[in-house]
Length: 281
Image (cartoon, rainbow, N blue to C red):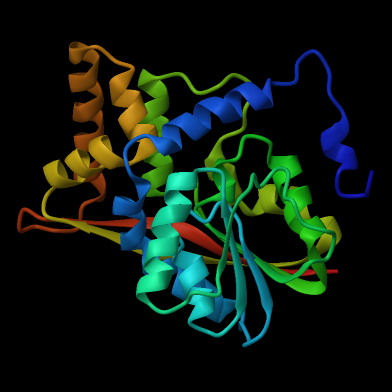
């Protein structure tokens, strides 16, 4: 057992059943088609790679890669990229994008961020854009990212903050469909104190607040896209009867009205996230 796995090894009767929770989460992310939403977030991967000062030839691991936004951003900078996710269909979408852009050398592998199938210090850079934050065991996830990153290497993340539009959206979902008991909120990954708990003993943390702008035809269009394709929202609506579906839809539309900057019927909603760069000790 290495130093990064010790904290996550301790269990007691109050420890959540992470395996069962992960199975349900995997089913949620496999439902719908996250790639429909994921492609709109491409700019975040580009910004993160610039913040990391990524160099050609560096060994880059994208964890919980989804349909490959950070993967492609790193490949465009001539890095040697391994792209991982535990949803095979998303890896296929990423692979199709890579082939279309001529990046046949990207290594796509099915893998769980909480149990990465790589040796210690295998990568110069480990990245995740709105991915690792949804793994249920925060300590284990951070430990694995640290373990596979070489000393002096970097870990880069983009994580929604608790106060962001997406953070508030998950709170709204939680009012209608209870989250798993004992599991910390994904939005904590967008909290500087939580990042310090996970990483400060193992490296230097730089976190910058940024905004991503969701741009859709209308609030109703956003709701329809997320109900149809975004796994957690898709599964939440599927778990409710018609009356409670209507109540959730009203709550989400009210939330959009609160954040929407557009006055022409379209949707322009900023959502804060932390762009995080950790230099591994």
